[in-house]
Amino acid sequence: GAVVSQHPSRVICKSGTSVKIECRSLDFQATTMFWYRQFPKQSLMLMATSNEGSKATYEQGVEKDKFLINHASLTLSTLTVTSAHPEDSSFYICSNLALGETQYFGPGTRLLVL
Amino acid sequence: GENVEQHPSTLSVQEGDSAVIKCTYSDSASNYFPWYKQELGKGPQLIIDIRSNVGEKKDQRIAVTLNKTAKHFSLHITETQPEDSAVYFCAAKGGAGNMLTFGGGTRLMVKP
Image (tube, one colour):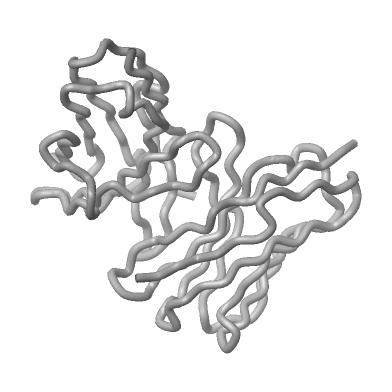
């Protein structure tokens, strides 16, 4: 299956700082990528759809000014959590989109905001 | 929008036994149903998927069945091994919005 990488794998930051998470589609060009958030013992919740060369589409309830998404190339999408707070602590996972429907996920980034 | 229900939430089996996880979906337009395995601290890994034009698909010890009329699909794992222990998620896609909607997950524990 398609390979997706994320960096960093885990990050600890102070409240009020910003954190950038990178998602790379390693073996094919992805015009569309997705960002999910997963709280402990819960399912994956879609945050936004990242579109190469255009603005991201955010799900209802997700603040676009807080979770900045940039998809500047066909292999890289970034998620920046701005002014992070403890409630933003979560597991953030990205995925690419292959053959129009199959999604392969990255290894995830665990964010802890102190 | 699409709603996917998954049962059971936890499942404990003895090594060598079979495990079955069931999911139902609400949007009859959904036509793609993947299953993911997620190990602790890792991202979900696609293990098998099925499309609505197929009723059953098998890959070694893993099989998935789909009943479009009843809008439910199931994952079957035979001859379970301790390394099968993980959280399994079903998902559905193809309905309104064409987004992947996940079930709540099943924590499978295989006892050696």
